[in-house]
Length: 377
Figure 1 (tube, rainbow, N blue to C red):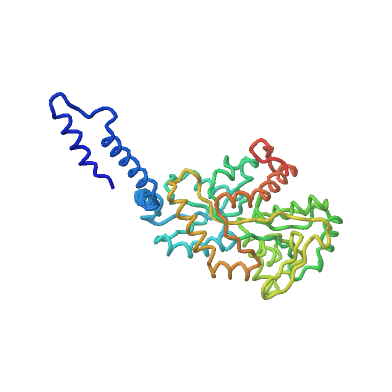
Figure 2: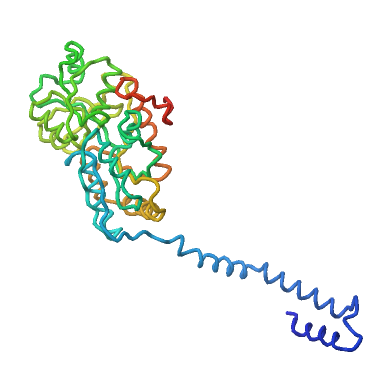
């Protein structure tokens, strides 16, 4: 390595001599200068130097990248439906898995009303500090604006999905209808007379029955309740004749032979633990299909980024590997689908589209979906 101090002394000594200075083109000095430049370039280009530089940069950047959110008080998680329903069930199971990760209590609060939009509105209007979340079906959240219930879109939310649910057409155990064909034939013979219990407009049960009515042309008497569980109980009690709520809400009553399942509202059969196989509606109505109905926890956009980064990390590790949630799904006729971020937005959009346009085409919605960013599928 060239001694730069020596070169400096040579130059200084030359300048100190009266009337002298480094001669232009002095070969010794220029040779030493060129050696210094070459030496410095070799050091800068060496793998060790590059590695040290990267390590130093990473060390300074690391605190900002690894800033996990540590909530200092309990988190409010609003379930906009009644206790005991599908949203309530899976949300409480998910909250129990998240509490040890966050080191804080998650308080689940049921705030039903206005087809789930009331509780959702509370979460949307809460301070954007990360301490208020909501939950439910993504297809409901995406349809509120078209129904003029709440000015919000699916893209206004960070989605953390946990399960996908299917609706089941079921009747009271003492009902005369043994097959879905018999039920549909009766609905055609007695338009608007056979009562169907659901959790209200835009609920999974209502959307399912509307999809069936659109394809088959049947008419029914819609009876609404504040949640899926009350709707199921109403059919079990004989207050209504049919329910089209979710399998997770009907599972116990089906296993207990209090409800008779006739068909899954879709094109695939359902294997329900402790019961057996429920056939798809497509077996009786050829060509019938229904998009996947995803459920999850929703956090409004605008909260501190570390909140979303922490939840994203929790979803990819704790939730994705949760034995409790996997067991919940398999025992209640649901699909375990831990998805978040952009993948979640893409996954839910087909159901959002189908639901919003179904509501509009059946005159339940007053605002055309294509005017609020939902093109026709």
